Amino acid sequence: MMTERPSRSETTAGADATAKQVPRRLAREPMRWLVLAVPYLWLLLLFFVPFLIVIKISFSLAAIAQPPYTPVFDITEGLAGIVEAVRSFTLDNYLWLTEDVLYLRAYLSSLEIAIVSTGLVLLIGYPIAYGMARSPSAWRLPLVMLIILPFWTSFLIRVYAWIGILKKEGLLNQALLALGVISEPLTILNTNAAVYIGIVYSYLPFMVLPVYASLERLDTTLLEAASDLGCRPIRAFWSITFPLSLPGVVAGCFLVFIPVTGEFIIPDLLGGSETLMIGKTLWSEFFSNRDWPLASAVAVVLLLFLVVPIVLFQNHEVKRAERGD
Image (cartoon, rainbow, N blue to C red; front, side, top):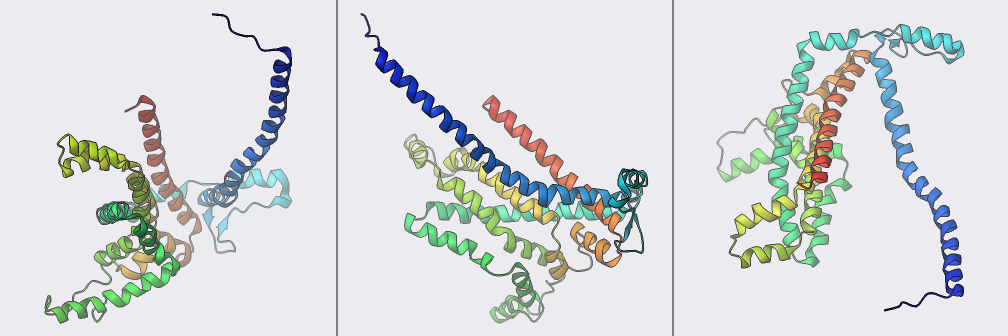
């Protein structure tokens, strides 16, 4: 069976149309690169450059001066002055971190509090997100608004409000005494329990929203098919729903775990003197001891502790996705 060959006019028209589309694609390329460059430029200016400054300070020595460290780059001295300043760098601050057990205890305590808090937020936030995703469509937007409503109030004010709730003469103890649950006020404020309560309350939306986004996109026909095949609801949840919602769970855990590790306001206001977290240690070194080089070294090590495992985990997930696991 012979196919009809296109005429010369049709071939010419097709070539002209293709030639017109090429400049359009070329014109769109700069805009595409510009859109990609804006967030990277933002990160470069507001994260990478300040982080380089922090690294530079971490190799300096504390001094009674302004700024409180030496050496300081002096551009007026030219390249020779910069080279001389670099030669004055020292590793004493990083060596001191290995000698003083306080910083190791602060790191480990921060990781412990962050892991436990992330687990509590997941246990509380997942059922909330599941209920939102399974609610009628007309209710979902108001429910999402209720979740993000606390963000309309200052974070500091919300944490201060918990002081009035958790103190001995606060609302919680008064309610428990009125109900006859306790016979005398409980000591909750200035304990680790108060820190966990404040963290769970403050970071709950960061877990609920990504998990809800994953569950809301779930194909419900999979659950119907599992039910038709005799699968019980609990088994269908653990076999279908939860595995498909894992991207939201992982995103929520990252959004909670990373900022909680360096949290300062909640342990400072709700925790006691025995609540040891790296955020409080950084604050003390920067503003009480005025030891900026040591505090910068603590911040650099903390960032490495957080970034390196996350990068390794992401590489593992990418390789697993490529394998089709």
